[in-house]
Image (cartoon, rainbow, N blue to C red; front, side, top):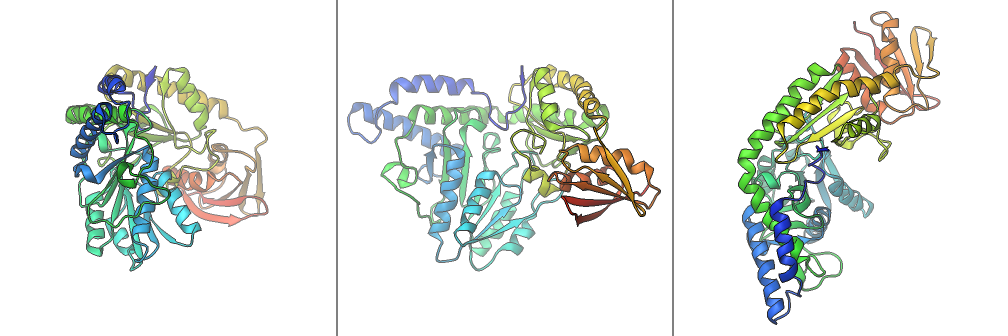
Length: 459
């Protein structure tokens, strides 16, 4: 089985496994106790903190361990907002942040605060000037991921951090996806990470709060982790997380170069091997092992199942999956095609032969899924004056786009097609199809049921 979903969780690094097993015998006691076993556990915890702090680029007393990367984000945002509540209750986030950040933003809004979402371009890149424009006198905190979890685009953290520093606003960086590849540049104020993203065990996150940043921990606190992460520390897992972070960093430069060559191979060859494919994400500013593409006229869930049958584990931001009925918020913010989306995230050490096998299997797999979806049942096409109407109500993606593609040639150049759909993904996929196909997307209208999407035939 070829595991190509390292952006979700990387396989446990051998060093992490060794450190975990070794520390199970040495790190089981309470590190707050003064007897021998407690002192031994405290030594392990302190050493792990120092190693993690060195990798991050901060002081050991600025770093705490949490129960997950999500908990680190939630704790960091809540504490920073509370610490600066006298300034205001305005939060700035990018539109492509991880759900842990966006859920925190929703909580703030529900409590009466305000949130500004900064948009991104079609490659998923945020503009530092947009962050500067969003800053207000009551801005308490800004958030920006170091790299995107779905498309791999690396963000201009250093430039945004400088904009925020000049305004006196702290910047929290979600560095979960990038921390294994190197420290985050720039004068950021808070940083969150997650061990299972770099080959450490799950259930360990880290949060860095720079000295001088106003921070007030929320909820019940105790004496552990500077009062910011209550509860008994999982010392064996923490030791393994720090050991694996140091290990992957030692291998990062060489492995990054190798993975970039493999992902560039995928980016270049997939559009040649498979027709009607859009490769998404920034072509240069991206993580070494991540490449994402979307296939027209393909059901994402079906495609992932077919690839699984071919022994490939991949992920998807597609709306056509069993986990969600709405398009990926990342792909929506980018204006990218969401149907038939595939994210390939290669783990360190992946064999070149596995990538070649994936490229060999993919064309036939996509063709098979398209063939199954080829002729929609009960396709309803009518004419409404000079407009061709396609009734796709009750049909999930990619059927509305398939039906649009089948009839666009039936209208004269300059003529309109009106697609009726109640699938949320159509709002994203029909404009994306128009851009890929060189047709004009006129806009959307309200309809008795669902939404009407107007497309003008250009050629």
